[in-house]
Amino acid sequence: MNFSSPISQLAAPQGCVPEGTRIYAIGDVHGRLDLLESVLARIDTDMGRHPASNAIRVFLGDYIDRGPDSKRVLDRLVDYCVTQPTVCLMGNHEAFLREFLKDPDVLTVWRHCGGLDTLLSYGLTPKIETDAQDQQELASELERILPSSHREFLSGLKQWFTCGDFFFVHAGIRPGICLTKQSEDDLLWIREDFLSSRDHFGKIVVHGHTPVMEPDVRPNRINIDTGAYATGRLSCLVLESDTIRFI
Image (cartoon, rainbow, N blue to C red; front, side, top):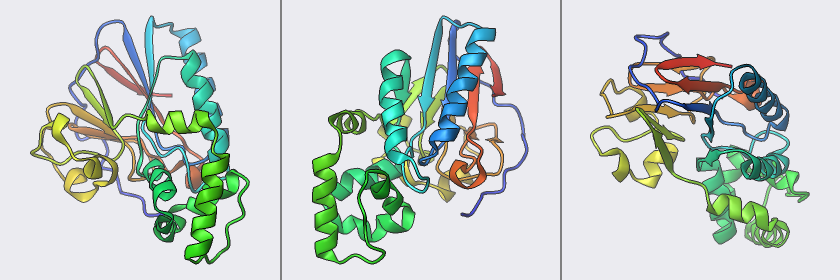
């Protein structure tokens, strides 16, 4: 895994969320149920110490692949969304799963991004090397065993979410284009053109997708993908009024 080198806070982002609202934004989980449970417990503790009437949990995508428990991560999020105010965004890894069911050849690329780990978590046994027939059989079997709750969860993922002065997305945005007119490809995949930009995007962009060793806080964006599956660190950003903190 390549980690982007963060520049320590160049300046505190100047933004706020509506009065009475608190946002808990969670970075890329990547099949690490243990780290997800730890973050959810930290949120519960924080809520117990500092109650909030409108606390929204925002997950930035990439729930699956690479780690060992992709299926159980989705099980947990499906249940969690029923009991808590939650927004779940689409990540490029969920897009891989979605496309694999339509086009099994996608496994040729997805396998190099942790797709085999996800298939294993559903009880499938993919070969180290797969041909077209193997890929078709795997896609058909996943189609058969994928829980309906997972289908509904995946189909309901949002591409972006906005609250106050913040715009939440998986990968980032294309500079110079209106936030609400971004392409799905950029929202899920963009890196350098976004990461290197010092533009003000209209809102402060909170994102994941590009792993960093620690949260990268800049005037125009905040990256909270701390490479959970490789580092054991799943970050949670808390936004309330005009304050920014991590738990």
